[in-house]
Image (cartoon, rainbow, N blue to C red; front, side, top):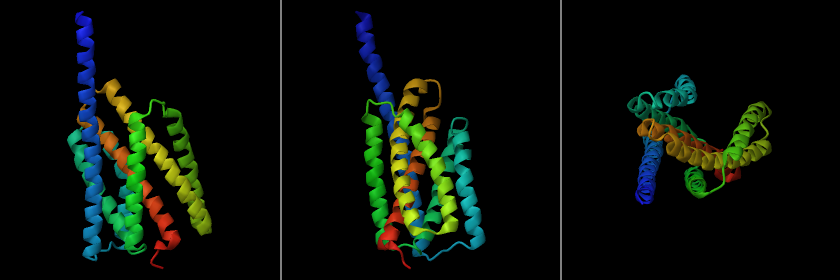
Length: 231
């Protein structure tokens, strides 16, 4: 009889812990998006532009910093939090440069669209009973191939091909959003009592933040091609 009483209590405790973890993960992810948006807005409003050299350094740091944050998340969660906020500011600075290429309507439309896609796919990742591991693996492989194709198209400068690639990228990052959400949920259920919940939440927040940012950038390019460019 004690076993029957203990099992529901353990289930409740696990659900409470999971809810706390998800709240923390999405909270840090949302804070990162807010910091990026505020940084971009302040830089555009103040008409602050990075020099070409500064832009190059920012882009290099932009690609490297996620690996550093991910590596520190489980060892030094506090350091990872600071790194995530620095990365959010850096992303905002990079995004601010797009304001001189795309119209405000295009950027607003891309932001709202990316938020809608992200929330939908994250909800699917949290609620679906289907294992998304295979979809996530396929999406990751497709992303690698797409990056190579995009680099080649940088030299070809084919706008129609770029548009097609952007649509494909949106599908890929939508799938990755659902997979990353489900993956982090499973990781907490499997390792939550063995590792730092804060570290795990920061790791998940970083992955979801990258999914959101890439969704936004690809949708922005689509909006730009369809008349949202300042050119």
